[in-house]
Image 1 (cartoon, one colour):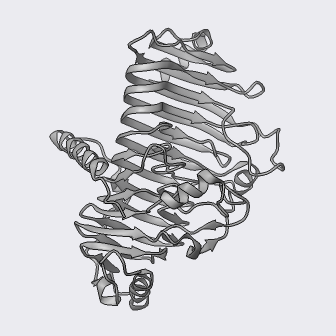
Image 2 (cartoon, rainbow, N blue to C red):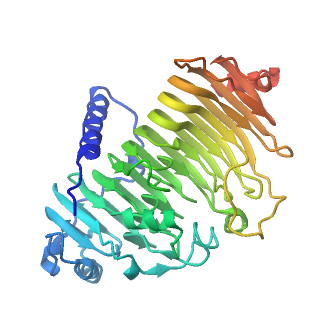
Image 3 (tube, rainbow, N blue to C red):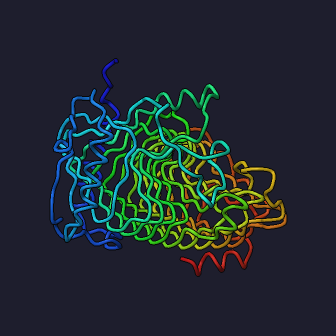
Length: 447
């Protein structure tokens, strides 16, 4: 096997160091108190003590399973730490348990096996009704947990490597049998911390907390080639009280995308994503830096995203839904954004995304209301953006304030349809739909 080029990781580490240095240079806001760090664990075990070998060849799936089962069985007060020493620990999928820390030492790599035929299947998420890519079940994530409390995944910037190439190839060739696995998925869990770890080359979405509450993800690096399909960085899904801070993300799809279920299944499940803070994110994507949707059928509300820096990307900010989604997107503020070499500065649209089946309700129209986009500076921008609502469900109270987008050539103007709101100090000049007196009044009050 050819040696991996470390260029992407080295670049990410340099950027993360610069971001961290800037953060330390001045006191900055943090939401990480949403999940206080647990006290020192009552015990520590190493995967090497359960028959594991970090030689890059030995399959360690059983060793990880035995280690986690021991932590669960012993139930030490304060929980236990599972230590992964330096080395390359080849493994298939394994589950976590409550009150545990998975700690990756410096130089530790938890590497997914590329034997896709042995990958277990699990049931589809009830809010999706089927696998996201194909009908039926889905492949379990490399690291998985359900119904857990007090879980920490951290370390000294060790790496979780999905070795996604075979999965991407199957997707490109149309030979997938089921929906690809995530690197990390936690379901119906609470009090989760993910920090100081590198996620690399996920087969599908990287980090997917779904039906979770009280989750902190910070100081994480996420890497995948720009041509790797659907390798979203962090996708909170029907989850609440989420804090995402100080991360570097360069992948093949949205860096961050907030979701809440898919069409009739998400409507029936009815769990929104709410009270989410995204702060100090740097990265690059052929799609969006920060996104909401398009799967928003359970609703998305009370979101703050600020101090974002995206370069060489398709969209800076992309808020997306569709007819049949139902649900709502409301009370979302995106602030203090820097963009460079981005095709669209902003896109808010109601015609994005496919449907799980033909049973979706074509009359289920989403509500998009009270979105504030402010303090956005962009250079080398090709098109200002598109704000396009739905004919029978116009997007309302859309506020743009201090949005300045420039390019080497004149930036293509804003395009708007089925939308109302206000615009203050916007360049290029805003579309007429955002210049009404009532919309400007909302915009002024929202600031």
